[in-house]
Length: 521
Ligand code: FAD
Ligand code: SIN
Image 1 (cartoon, rainbow, N blue to C red):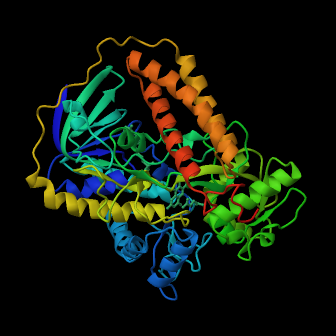
Image 2 (cartoon, rainbow, N blue to C red):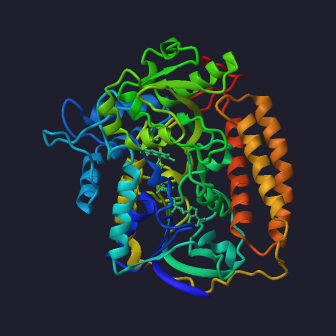
C-alpha cells in the first residue's frame, strides 16, 4: 500500500502534536504513532514546564541554571534561543487550552526543581503531562488536515539507499522521502511518501531494567536515523531520575517528582541520615546527576536497596493538594506519605543526546527534522535541567514548523521509491528469543553502562552486545517483521551508540561518570 502526504509526523507526544498543529494549515499531515495516541512520555510528565514568567526570575537566570546543569557542554546560542522563547511557547500551550495551576492572586503557581535558582516550573497538580497531552490531542483530532494512524509502527525512514544508491555518513547528501510503516493488525508495510518528515519518537529508557519511561520509549527514531547514516551525538549522557518509587516488579517505575523536593521533601538513608549536604551544598536540590550519583553511592556503601524521601514534616493538606497523584499512588501500595517515608531509587529517565539538529530542528538528512527527546539540540549538554524538555520540544517543534512551512512548496515527492521487499521472510515463532534477548540487553546496560561506568565495564558491555547484535540481525533478516523484533533491533542500535560514545569520552562529565576518570564519588 502507498500513501502520499505533505508532512509525515512520527510520534504523538508534545513534539509531534505541537508541530502537526502548526504545519496542518499548510498541507495534509499524517501522524503515525505506535500505540494509542496518548501513550507517550509526555502524558506521564509530572513536575511541569520551565519558563520565565515573573520577576525576580529573568531569562539570564534560567540560562545560567541550564548552562551550569549542562556541565559546560551546552551550546550557549541554543540555550539562549530556547529560554528566551519560553514565555511565548507556554502562552501558546495555554491558548490551546492547557490549564496550569494558579494561586489565589491569579498568578501562576510556579514550582522549583533541582538546579533551578528560582521558582519557574508551571504545572497542573502533579500530572502536568496528562494535561498537555490531552489538550494537544484534542486540538489535533479537531483539525481537518490531520490524520492519526494509531498502533502503526515506523520501521525505517526512506532515503536514497532505497533507490539502490550507496550512501556514506557525513559525506553524502542524503534525502528523506518518507517512511516504511508497519500495520501489525493487517501485517502490511505501508510506503508513506512525504515531502517533509518529522521524527518525534521520544526517548529510550527501556534500554534499562528500571525506567520511568513508558514501554513506547525504545529509541526507534534515533536508531532509524543512525541506520540511515544521519548524525547522532551525545548518547553517553543518559539521565537517571534520582527518585522513582521503589516498588519491585512494577514497570515502568512510578516517578516521584523532583517538585516534591522543591516543596521541602528531604532525602534520607534508611536509618534517617539527611545525606545530600555531604555531596553538594545545594543539598536535595542539586542537579539530577549529582543527586542520582549520591543516592547510588549511599545505597552501595550501605548495601541498601533504596533510600527514603521524607515528607512527614510538610503541611498535610498542601502536600495532598499539590501532589494528589503521588499521594494516591503511594497509598495504593500501603504508604501514607503524610505519616511514612517514601522508598525511592534512581531510574533511567531521559536521553540527553540523539539526532543532531540545528536551530530549526533540521537533521543532517535533507527534509528530515527531529524534535523532542529523540533530538540533540545542544540545550542539555551533559545533563538536562529538570523540566527543560517539554520546553525544548515546544520551542524546536515551533522552529521546525516555521522552516518546514517556508520550504514545503519547493519539495517534490519521490515516486520511484519501491515498496518494502519482504521476500524470503517467514513468520518467526520464537518469541522467547526476542523477550529473553531484550532482558539480556537491559541487564548489560543496567550493570555496565549505568550511573557509574568504567573502561572495563564498557568493554564488557560492548563484547556482550556484539553477540546479541549478530543473533538479532540474523533473526530480523529472516523474519516477517513484528513490532517486537523491530524494537529489539532499535534498542541494540541505541545501546551500541551509548557504549561507543561513552568509550570515546575520556573524562567524567555531567551524567557520564567513569571510575577511570574520577571527579568525585
Ligand atoms: P513522547 O512524548 O515520548 O512521544 C513519543 C511518541 O513517538 C509516542 O507517540 C510514540 O508512540 C511514538 N513512537 C515512538 N517510536 C515510534 C515508531 N517506531 N513508530 C511510530 N511511533 C513511534 N519533562 C519535563 O520537561 N517536565 C517534566 O515534568 C517531566 N516529567 C517526566 C516524567 C516522566 C515519568 C517521564 C517518563 C518523563 C518526564 N519528562 C519531563 C520528560 C518528558 O516528558 C519527555 O522528554 C517529553 O515528553 C518527550 O516528548 P516527545 O514528544 O519527544 O516524546
Ligand atoms: C520530575 O517531575 O521530577 C520530572 C521532571 C523532568 O524530568 O524534567
